[in-house]
Image (spheres, rainbow, N blue to C red):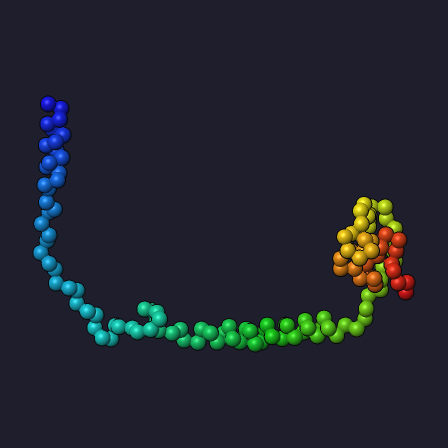
Length: 124
């Protein structure tokens, strides 16, 4: 008795047919020829002069700014003075040797700017 309603429901579900389709509607009318816009945008094919303001900003602001910065950077002939060496107890500690060179110099050592634990290599 408990199986009968379940099998009847399953049989009814398997034989169900989809509802009948509604009558076919005619296709929508195409828009008039004046309203059709061709191009990358459906609003307007190309913006009118939108790129010109960015071109002017680039050539009138950015290029001169880069040129002035380059002149200020590369035309400064005055070289800064090297600071005096002060031996601090917490700087330039060597607990073990470096695996390259004599073991006392860092990998990108510059004798003019990088000091060793005892001081600069070349005295000015």
